[in-house]
Amino acid sequence: MTTTVTTRPAVSVAGLSKSFGDKTVLEKIDLTVTEGTVFALLGPNGAGKTTMVRILATLLPPDGGSIRVAGHDLARDPDGIRAAIGLTGQFAAVDRLLTLRENLILMARLHRLGKTEGARRVDHLIERFDLGESANKPVSLLSGGQQRRLDLAMTLVGNPKLIFLDEPTTGLDPRSRHTMWQIVRELVAEGVTVFLTTQYLDEADELADRIAVIDHGRIVVEGTPDELKRRIPGGHLQLRFADPAALGSAAQVLDVLHRDDDALTLQIASDGGVTALRTALAALDRAGIEPTDLSVHTPDLDDVFFAFTGASTEEKK
Image (cartoon, rainbow, N blue to C red; front, side, top):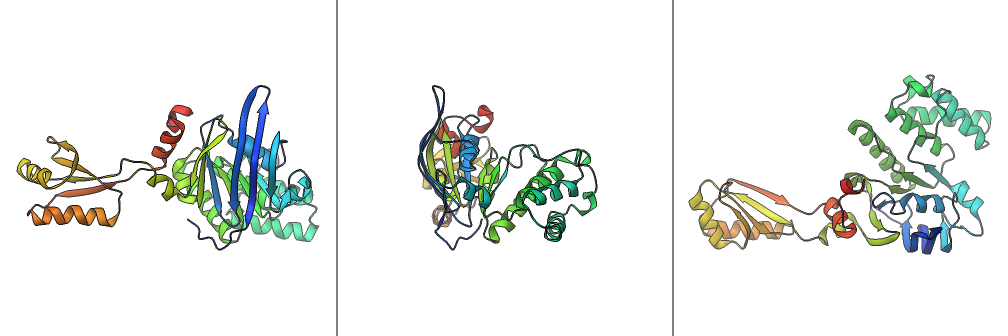
């Protein structure tokens, strides 16, 4: 995860609301995204993630609320926001008939970069995203991972201060996902702010400085990944023993949550910290008992998602 040195807001939202007909999609949303960080918005399909991104990116008007993005007020200066942001949507917004380089040149022209500056910028992005071997190929011949990298490269042509990534790695293979993660880390290290929506909880855990979970149009919990995981009970140590006698003796000196005589294991409550581990091992050592195996189990973001939305990510897809 990134280390932040600034507290200035890149996004500041108070009371954001949006409805479509009689369906409320966003209800009085309050959130702040700090400059130079990754902010991840999690939630099941239909929770309002993409609607929020579209509003913040000036593509959809809100029904109410105060919104500032990249230092600009949405109601008063939407053009200022558009000049400062980039958006990579759920599907690659590229022309499949043009070559990779032609797509980037087109974007440079749309940003009104001069011919020399545009060519320099295109060459830099092709090199940065390791797309040199495919630069003159039609996009239709590129892999899914290459198309997503191109899509993000096109977003960066205008040097945005803030990038919205709306489920950017959906459908990518693990190698391509990790490549995208590394690119995001590099951008943030350069001072870019990233507003990320994702269905992949490991992605949020890997990248995000702060996470908000949205469900039925409301933010139901917010915090750092570690803060959110600490709010969920269920952490434990699992210890395995060599024989039933050792298992029975250990059960007498430990506060056992669960005992499995067939597997010769005990589970004891733990927050996953070093202190809890030392306490358990010290108690066993005093009794002359040595486990053959030990593992630490702590709640993950999937547990957080389930606890605060009432369903797992797989059930909601």
